[in-house]
Length: 80
View 1 (cartoon, rainbow, N blue to C red):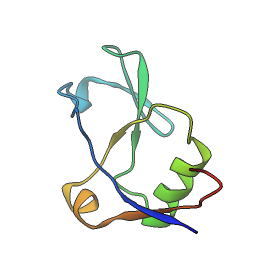
View 2 (view 1 turned 180 degrees about the vertical axis):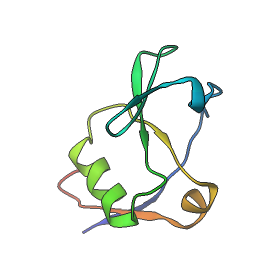
View 3 (view 1 turned 60 degrees about the vertical axis):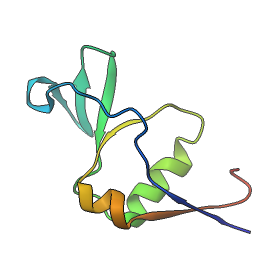
View 4 (view 1 turned 45 degrees about the vertical axis):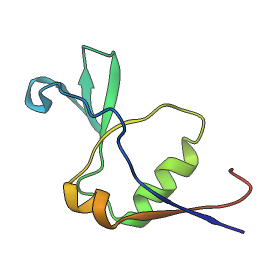
């Protein structure tokens, strides 16, 4: 059985995206020493696949507000 999860950002980052160093899949944040993944151009299925492939990692990501309001990720029970 799959579980449906909405994407939430409990602690939004306040760093300036434009001042971060560009990387292939986002930008590198010097403040937290992590790559912030740019999800803004991804389709819901691509976002879902990213989270499944990186299930045990803490992810920093940039989303459009509309994505946070509309995307629900299907998480397979084998992942939960």
